[in-house]
Image (cartoon, rainbow, N blue to C red):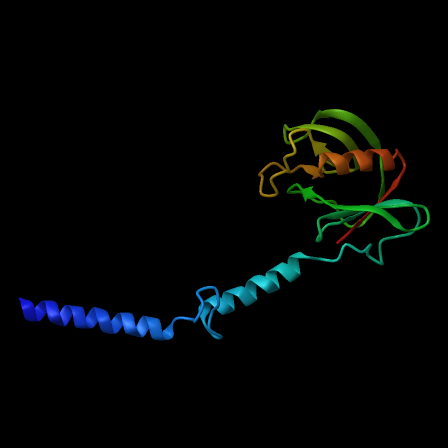
Length: 179
């Protein structure tokens, strides 16, 4: 029995030595080529991809307009001089309008969105196949579920951004949707 205990302690000691020999000098530093360093590099790449430019896209029309970039999930409010006065991220619903130029067709100070959420500052710019596309802010601050089964055309922004868009986009204001 004593021999078994000595052998077991020897194996545990050897494994501990091997682990210590291959561990980084500082726990927060990973060895080059290790899984942890590869994971950190991938995280940095993802962060760079997520941090997209907030500059107004070049091919987004001219004059006063609202620009909605589908892929970037971002809106720009552009003055008559062609300069963006504000930009912000939005949360789209499952349905998206086709890229193109539209105009604000109606506005509503508040109500219930097509997803059943209480909204304010509704700015509608397109309707197609029974889906109404418009910008709004949820009173509770929620964003639409992009994976919802019900096809809605809500494009949600924060309440502050919703107020800014409401002040900017009157009926007839151009809305340019780009990929």
